[in-house]
Image (cartoon, rainbow, N blue to C red; front, top):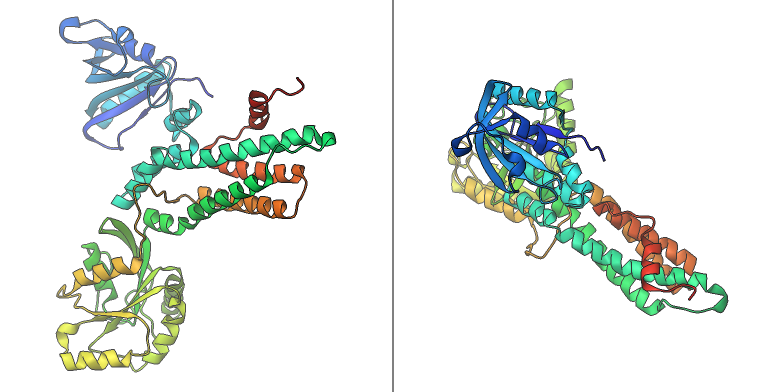
Length: 466
């Protein structure tokens, strides 16, 4: 690991009330101490070297005889810090000029600018957290909904890691016994009970399958559940998008075919992020550009989890069957909602007639007026129900990282081979290889891959050759 002392601005870029500059490394305290002048009773003295960890000190940051800023110094002594190293955080005024002056001063004094994510990388290398917890830090920073925040917090607290480490520990015990058998192969002894190993493999397969199966939910909660708004031109799709987002995100006009490209944005409804996609109106046209937009609409229908088919109550097209043929097949195995818009311009009898026209379409339906904001809350409730998210307890862990998911899939394939191998009475060396592979993929998630791990376990539990 690079032993250089690193520094960086830890608060968002730009000007604000205060900014925090973080310094971490062997020389962090020494470097800042040489630049700091304390105020108050200890005025003029630089006493950071004598301070204990978790202390705050007020004073001035100096460039020789020039005061750069009046600051607060927070001191964290390793290993009891975020990175595991000696760390100093300088809270200064949020002027961009002051921030840059302090950074330049630190670099001239022996620091270097930190690479992206390097503080968290050092925390991982110093075993303050494992790899999955380190990744959760980025997820926590990027979380914009209660569900995404809860997932990141659970992962950062190590619940996922504990579950994986428990699985690996059980596998390690068995693979050690199997490899011990190989050392005594001429004596035909069995240390690993195959029935117990099969039960363990079945239990691990169940755990891994559950975790891998949660990825579809976790990915949706993390990145937003995709909701496509589709329908004919001028049905009110862009008006609805603007209303849901509470801003003029899409251009609205009475001209048919105004929206020719895909417009996407996110909104949080009842603590869950939804990614709404406004699409080009579906109609028969000879316009090449508009047809390209319609093709994009079809792709977004296939990619979405929920489809809102917007229908203009005042101008129901004679191409209902044609429209249904374009939308319904692509919405198969997804949640389709018929949204009858502009009901403020029609009577109840006309609405009943409209419902009957779409009687062959298997979908929920709702009547709204996007212009008058009528029944929009009911539509949001319907979208929430359509998402059909499972009830997640405080003990459940949801996988939301594609790297973790791929590793789990590979680990599951390996453990299934172990089950099949036990059934077919294959030799221990093949069983050992499949168990090793499963452990490898589980270890990839937490970053705990160690080629000497198995040998170390054997020597610590058995006295070979005695």
